[in-house]
Length: 182
Ligand SMILES: [Zn+2]
Figure 1: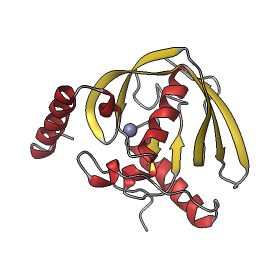
Figure 2: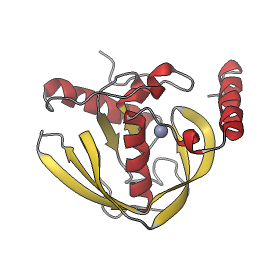
Figure 3: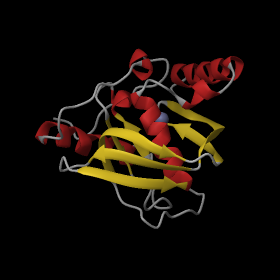
């Protein structure tokens, strides 16, 4: 079996579907998590939700560490950088204070837009060992976890843009695909 998945891109229907809650993190889900994070590292990316590999369960992975090594040039190194494996993530707190950051998405290659989200969120989830866990996120990690949880609800960052802008981006991705530039 391959160690990675293929990442699907817009307008694949799985990106618009809601993923279902899993009953527990068992060896099958752990295998999926391992394969997902390898897929994310290879891309390279900092977050990946199951919908993006055409699996409709509520599983996501993130890793904001070693960013420079992985081709990110924003000079940011998250101090608490480590891989996150989350099942059934749920936002239990979101700050009223907002934050705007440029976001991109492995399923919408080479397209970016400024997106406004809560600056700080707290998330409850099941970890790699099926233990209940909580994390508080700010900055890039906050944008990332909200972006990935959106995926599990069938929501993409371009859904926050105007219809005109959204359609333009989808057309551009289509062109990239046609000319094999992804
Ligand atoms: Zn994404």
